Image 1 (cartoon, each protein chain N blue to C red):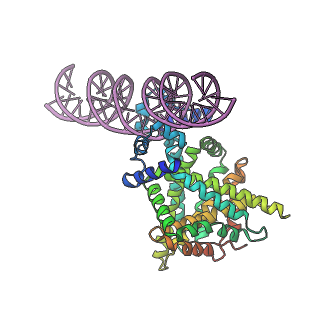
Image 2 (cartoon, chains in turn green, purple, brown, red):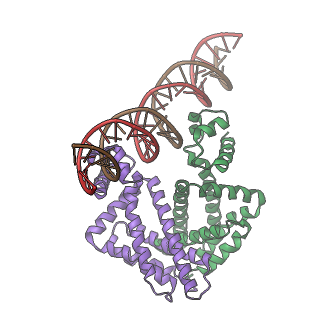
Image 3 (tube, protein in one colour):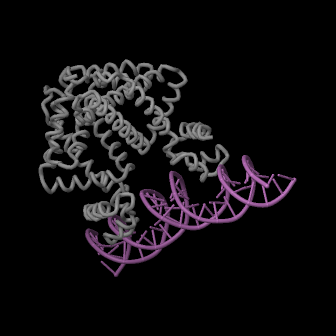
Length: 185
Length: 185
DNA sequence: CCGGATGTGTCAGTGACTGTCAATCATTGC
DNA sequence: GCAATGATTGACAGTCACTGACACATCCGG
């Protein structure tokens, strides 16, 4: 049921804009009351941001599967592979493109998306800290946090750069991460 | 009048939380109607985020004053001097500390803050692109965008690290930016 | 003094979201 | 099959941030 609502909502968002689409309209589109919509989604934002949550989980898993002795910068690049991969698949690419178009129409939703990204970054940084500690290395929390932020800045810039051609995302990401690779790594 | 409202609002936010404070309460605290509150501020968020706007202008001016031939990474570090300086001033430090405490109590406001930061980053990146072009260099927009994002990631990590001791912010910032300095700069 | 400009408060409303409650549906046990 | 119980749903009233409209008050210049 939740995915049915999400699909109907996404269509409406694309057709008329995120802010211009009311929850009543979404609910009506799937034949339920507005009250019930909120039984399936915590908020209107969640319809869109749940996708990020799922992707974030994939990134976290990928990072956790990297070898502990690998340089963090490389591990972070590898953790972005799920993003690169989904943009190589035509169906997923179209969906992601649509999601970004929705987010782009609403500064408020975009901000909420950034808030989510920040939370993801925090959890990835925590993992790297724990990883370093588990390897008998003294983790520098400040630097690891900043590094995760840097890696996401590269991801973000590559997203922006390849908005028109999502297949180019992987190349842009690699270029950005090569150029911004920290000197001490 | 606007700053009087802002002061009253900030006190209420600190006392009972951002989300827990209603616009009616703020308006009553300064002896006006809720409708008039919205004549002074575009939204409740603006009370807090206007501070960031002003600081962002300072950062942009500082960056614009840097020499065009200076490495971008160094220019970005210098552009953060206004932040460092205000945290060295006890009165400003207390105010900034209070603002961060307010933002920390509301994920929604924090997200809005991140949205603002993103906009600031975009404008700084644009400036760097224009600067490079004006110096006869071919600007790499992707890399410059990512670099600005990296610099802000360092700023953000340093903020987090020195939340309890804001006087340490400058040192943390320098440490993070030294560690994350791109190899090719 | 009068008219125009400006500022204010009241009011009703929108839309996201919430708690409550009655009605309905589905399941289970006798 | 029926009654009891649990789950689901929609209706409803309300909160809160925010908005447009409008009447009223104040100020200033001719």
